[in-house]
Image (tube, rainbow, N blue to C red):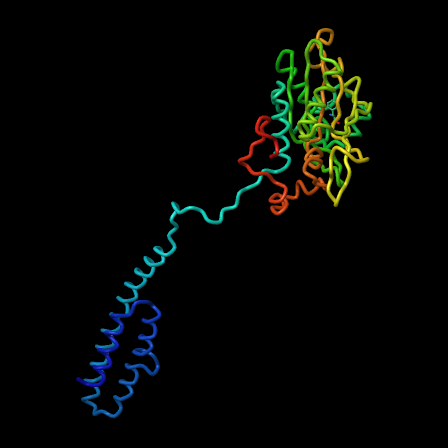
Length: 355
Ligand code: PHE
């Protein structure tokens, strides 16, 4: 056997045994490369006689063809097995337990809405909802706030249409009217939701949350209102005593009207509630104005009651020591991770609200 054939057989075996495309590539270079087996055999042809040259050249060509076919077959086989190998390696076993999963957090606003709903449901309030896009009628007129009333400016309304008939509701009070028109007294409801005003600073954002409360029956008085809010504030802050004041105020849809402030102080850049010499307004309230009852098809000579509108975001700030309202709506995952709540700990009165 000539040297050429020996080398060829050796390389051929090596090729058959090769296990990946890298190995195949290097064998290919040894055979077909510039200084590879085939080329060096061709170079030798010059020293042969014409007759031998023809013979040897055709032999080399046969071998070249044989090897080329071998290479092609090998390449196909390898690419199949390499793909199989990769699929095997990359296969996810979905039955394996998760090692590094992240638990999503409940936003403080959602948490506080759940807490408040839980507190009020305990004393017989049910939950109502109304649309964010309101008509001028429900947001103002039906609530005894006539055309050109200064309260309209006070609210910094976002109007949707130029005719000023549709708007983003500036408070949840329109839900009072919608609820009363839907049913018959007595009414005892809360209505949480988004509200909008053109305003932005440390304690105001253009979108914020309110929770409306409405209790209408035959003999409801201001005393019930105070008792109800007192119960609520203590339950909400999970304390025995809280500094709270009712300030006389004005709303077109209540008479008399009051605003409620909660005492707080700042310690280490955090809000501490219930004590201190600073006051934060958390809600507006009052006895529902007879005109609102009339507009809601409720007879004011037979029924009366109170309403209140709580600023939910402010309550969340106070309870959980968050001092910039704007951070609530920046969608920063790190913030949420720090201030958010465990989704499995749903607030209840009997098990605890925030613990
Ligand atoms: N709607 C009032 C506001 O947004 C709050 C309020 C509600 C006042 C119900 C009285 C009664 O400021």
